[in-house]
Length: 299
Image 1 (cartoon, rainbow, N blue to C red):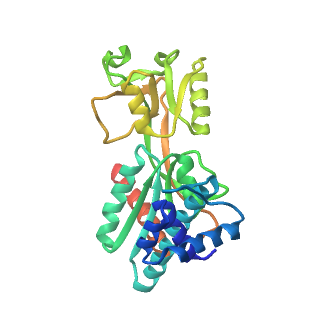
Image 2 (image 1 turned 135 degrees about the vertical axis):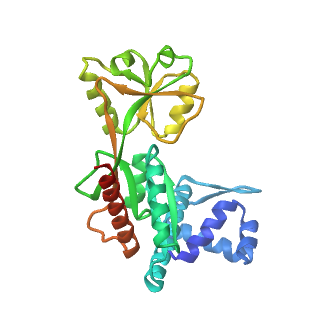
Image 3 (image 1 turned 90 degrees about the vertical axis):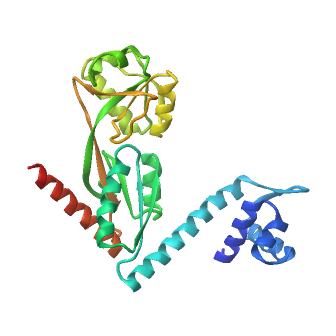
């Protein structure tokens, strides 16, 4: 498969119409149709279902489109990295991160790093831990901020922040009306719970409840923090997520869970065995210095 052919396929898959795709590519329709047919023959699969007015992607075609978009993104990332080596400390840092406190941590680092390297650009991506790590493995991200624990066999990293676990409650929930900004874990026993979908998180929550001789009543597993907020705001259940700093709204009431309390730890990671680019190494070094300065101010 050639990059040019994949580019043709991408345009056709987006337009779902050979005529419009040919116009967008500034070429005639027959050669474009021939390119798509040749690609199907090379792969041995049908990529499109041909209708009278429009095309429809087959399952194989949809998979190829996803992979092609990833390849194009990786090519652009590589082009920018090569340019940064030629021109000095320029280029783009690709940073993927989980929700919660991670975006606020990244914002602090970027604000300081920009003062030293104003020509550097940033591509930030936010999602679940599994999706973030998948992008890192595929080379679509230079760095990632994830929640502990993490795979130390395949990843290098260091802690960059903590925040307490909290319960998000509907404003009319009896626990939300109680005074104070903390609640004991025992008060959540028997409540329908909305929790992070990551397997290690669920296991940690079960062990947490086990310490008080109880079992969590898990109603729903979510990978997205804002989805949990949406469900909680409708009174579906009580969400247990790391308390996100800087985010406040009238949809839910957040209270830190205590007795016993737990903290979520965030880790900055990159692929072990793959040497980071010069720009990425510089950014890692800046974050380490930043954390040391913050620690010195506290001591």
